[in-house]
Length: 451
Image 1 (spheres, rainbow, N blue to C red):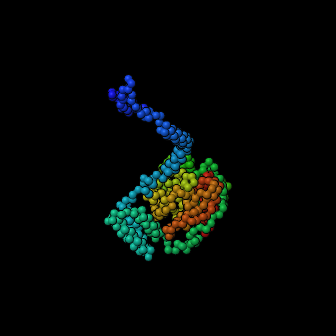
Image 2: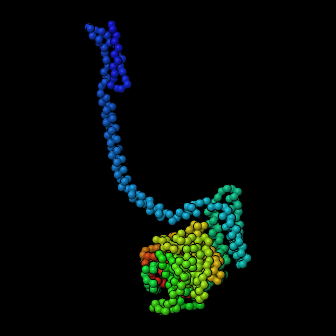
Image 3: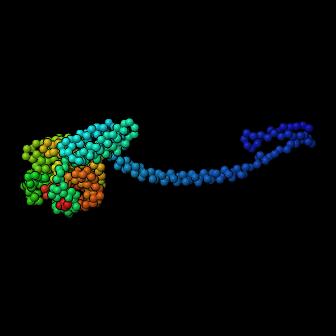
C-alpha cells in the first residue's frame, strides 16, 4: 500500500486538510471531507442582515445630519443672542457677585460702619443707636470666628452690614418729628393722576432724551425749565427756562442759558438726570462719575465726585430696553437733594446718597437690593425711593419703594403711570407743587401725586 499525503487547500484562507490515500487498481484512492468547501449560507444570511441594519442606521444618521444642518443656524443665532444679552452682566462674574469676597474688605466695612454708628450715637443718642452698637459687635465676633474656623459666608455678612448701615444712616438723617410733617406723614403714595400736561418739547420731537420740570424753589419762584440732549442723545450744554407757567405753556419769554461752553466741555451735561433746585442746575458731568452744579445767578460750576458710581452705560435704566446714559440720576424732594446710581460693590444694585447743597458733599448713603438695570426709572418722594417698570407703550407701573426712614423695601406696589410713548428719559418729583415731571421721548408730561 502506498500512502499518499494530499495537502488540499481549503476554501477558508490559511487552512489545509491532510489525508492519506492508497493505490487501488492502478489509481490513488483517498477519501476527502469536502464539507469545508460548502457555501456558508448561514453566515451569508447573517452578514446580509447586518448590512441591512447598517443601511437603516446610516439612513437615520443622514436624516439627523440634515435636520441638524437646518437647526444649527437657529441654534447659533439663539446662542449669539443669549451671549449678547449676558455680556452686560459680565461684571458680576469678574467683579462682584460670583467672586470670593475678601475678609479684608469686610473688616474695612466693619470699621467704617463702627465710625458711622459711633458718630450717630454721639450726635443723637437713642435706643436705636445703642441697639446698633450691640448688633455690630455681634457681627464683629462672627467675622473673627470666620478667621479662626476658616469657614466663610461673607456674602451673608455683607448683607447684614448693608442693613445695619441703612439703619445707621436713618439715625443720622431723619428728624424725630419726620412722620408728622404735613403730607409726608403718610409716607407712601396712594395714587398718581392722569397727565395734567402733555406738551411737545419746544426743541422738537427729535430730541427724545432730556429733562424738564419746575424749579424746586425754597423761595417759591415759578420757573419752568427744559434741558435737551444732543450728540446721540447723550450730551448737552443749554438749559431753557421760563419765568412762569403761562409763559411755558405759550412758549414765550424764555431764556437759553449756557451751562458749559460746548457739548464736549468738561462741565457739559451727560445723560438726562438733570434737575433744578432753587436756581441751581444739578447734573452728571461730562463722561465722569461726578455730579456738577451750575448756579444761574453766579454763573459758577462746582463738582462732586462719586468714586464708586458706574458710568458710561455700565448701569443705565433698562428693564424693557435700555435708556442710554442714565447711570447717574438726580432727584429733589422735601428732604433735600438726592443722587441715585449703582456700584460694583453693591452688585449693580441701586445706591442712594443724600447731598448737602451748600457744601456739595454726600452726607448719607443707603444701599438697596434693587438691581438698577431692572427698572425704567426712579424718583424720590418724602425720603422714599420709588422705581418704575415697563408695562406697555402707554403705561408704566410704580412697583418698588425704599423708605430711608426705616430702611425697609417694598416691591409689591402697583401704581399705574400713564405715558404717550415707550421710553422715559427723566422722571422726578417736585415737592413745591406735589407733581411728577416726565420727559417721555420728546413729550413733556406732569402728574399729580396723592397720599
